[in-house]
Length: 628
Image (cartoon, rainbow, N blue to C red; front, top):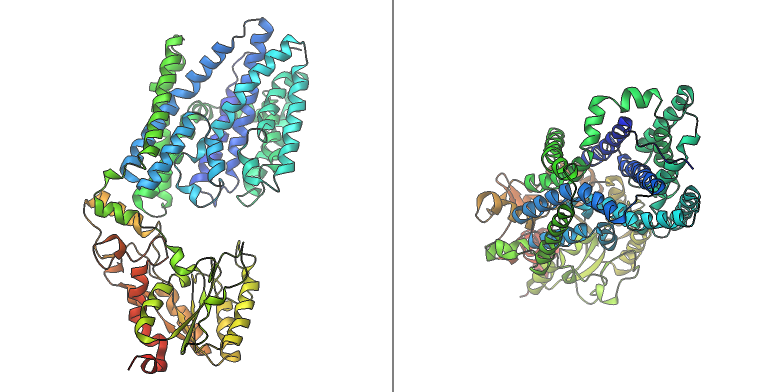
């Protein structure tokens, strides 16, 4: 079988440009390019095509060396990666909380060992909220690629020695990998996304093409047809797919087949005029360092700003990524990759990467080096959400595990009885109610469920059991017959369903219905806001900050909608916020912070809020419940 031609193809660099631009647009403008993550799949096919072609030619000429192969891979991959990993650790030192910095240290170690995909598999999914805060999230793809190239050259050498058909081997292994991907995508989607076995078919598609593309028709007409179909498949994947699709699965056929068709069509107009154009080739040449730089800069940009980046800010970050990528390519990659090859370079790069791994391990061992911060800042920045004080898994249910409240959730022998119904933010009110109970003597019934707001007949995203739980709580309210029902939650949506809940309570019970508006929101968590303020000003955050977002406008909407139905509305933001900003702390100690994350009150914050509203909450019951 004829090996692939060694002739340079500028259109392949142009295809690299398409791949990296898809990924950059997905990360920077996800709403505009929801399926841009398929750029990684395009990279995989290109990589399999190019590297298998190189190995095949050298095997055919009898001069393939495994050591030289890995020497080339090290000179290609290590230089830019070492620079970006080093820069990321430095930025983490200045801008990350100890716990987050420790996580970055672990991710740096895994990335230096090309095991980032395995590390991320053990942590969470690619599309979840926490992943958006990981500066090295994107290096999972590099892990898969390098794991593949640990074994693929060995298989190629074995096939050449046994005179086996290398193309047939690539096809058989590729089909097996694809079928494994399809079989596992339903039951283990995160593992299917990250494991090399379920991603190998993408690289093997390129490998098979490297051996078989000379067999396809290379006339301009046939090439044009294949190229336009390839463009259509990649474009369809970028537009149709999003983070909610089960990917790769069958959907991966779109970008993989599209890339293979474009690679097989060098004579096509698309390849010659568009992909091989100088701007596209230039982007393709810096695509690897551009891929490495863009995501850490986006993540740290959000950390430094402490909030969502605006459109101009994201555009500026991508421009900075391109400039850094060009500088990395020109002054780091080219001298090392294209200079005189030597074992000394390989050993030096290997030692540098080992030092990165050691540095990452040291950050983990040092628990994020919390000595970087003064004790009081460190204590505040490490405040955690103490859900155990809210009777989690007992009276604050995780609906993926429990659907039944404990008997202790209702103090049936105490009156007046205040029943809390809501999500975890309602559960966070319990410490304040307990403190008020010491003086007022009222009873507490807690029927709360994580991420499930008190909204009858509402379908809550990613919480399929919420509707059934709300029906169950309403039934329990009828049995318990509380004097006051306190509704609280994150109220951004489902106002009609909240109104339905108020109407049902007024119709079917004799209880007063009190709706407590939402608490202020801290975009990345109040502890992180403490750290950011210290990094900028080198002092403790003031007691009020304008970075807390009070739901004032929505409070007015809720009051106007619910009070005519008989509810009594209390604004939490009126208590916690004023013209100077929202309350960050009640004292100077760590326990005096008012919130432990974005929206959950600390024990101190809960006590402060309930003290301010307890008379209104108990209403006419207040004087009767006071000890005489």
